[in-house]
Amino acid sequence: MLRKLTLVALVLALASTLWAAAKEDYAKRQSKLNEMLAEAHYELGEWCTREKFFAEAREHYERALQFNPDHVGAAKKLGDTTKLVRKAPSLVCEFRLHNKTKVKAELLMPDFTVRTPAGVLLIPTNQIDLIELAVPPRPDRIFSSSYTGQGHVRASLFSAKSKFGPIKVKRNDIQSIRILRPCEACDGKGQVTCRRCNGVGRLTEKSVCPDCGGKGWVKCSKCGGRGKVVCPLCGGRGRFRGAWGRMRSVTCPRCNGTGSIDCPDCRNGRVPCKTCKGKPKSTKAGPCPVCNGKGTVRCPVCGGTGVKPLPTPEPVEAESPPDDTAPKPQEE
Image (cartoon, rainbow, N blue to C red; front, top):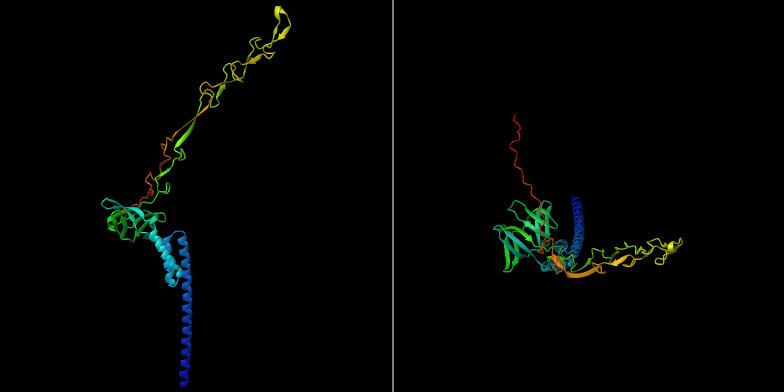
């Protein structure tokens, strides 16, 4: 009996030792896995920081610290990213209230948390164009660079700073929030370079004579541009009979037998243009008629406001009411 009890005790001790060794091995494996996951989140956070996705970088640094609280790099980067997010310039927004009032203020929120059918999204404020808030449980409408569609904005208060000081705007009072993002075409300036004068403000124009077409000369009307006329002495024959009816003909001394002489009114069939007097082009400089000498014109994209125009929202299809005229199945 004593031997049986001793054998049972040895078996239990051996099992306990094996269980403790397996537990320790599991803890080591779990610690190694946590370190790998923390390093993966840290590397992804560094990539987000280089791409200036500071909100996403902060989230991955926090996840890295959850898996490995002793991760020094993640803790340091998290502090730097938080400072960058807080120091980032806030954007001016326009609150449209339900009482038709418009309030412009400097929005102090770095991002918006939106619950969508695809999941929860964290949309940076500098990517949002317009948020149309609806009465719950109806979804809100979001127009942004990264997401456009329906969703539920989780915030119930919106922090902003007006010229009178910090304000808190309640969700129930807001009809829509428009972020006044700078226009990408003019970089928020409202003016673009005039294409007519290339920003110089003055034009140098050259006027061309309509009679000579800019050549400065025209064809001689007497010789037709040939430069030669019929010899008046021989009548173009080049020879003529001698005096007193002699049969022998002699060469015309005026044209040397060619029958034509140089045109006395022109040179080589050309005469100076009487309209431009031989000066075919005249240069005129004056202010550009498009920009009135300013060198810039109003941005055609934003209309000179410097604010990015709102996207055209797609019409929401209304749900059609049930058709009461449809035949109903007869009950047996």
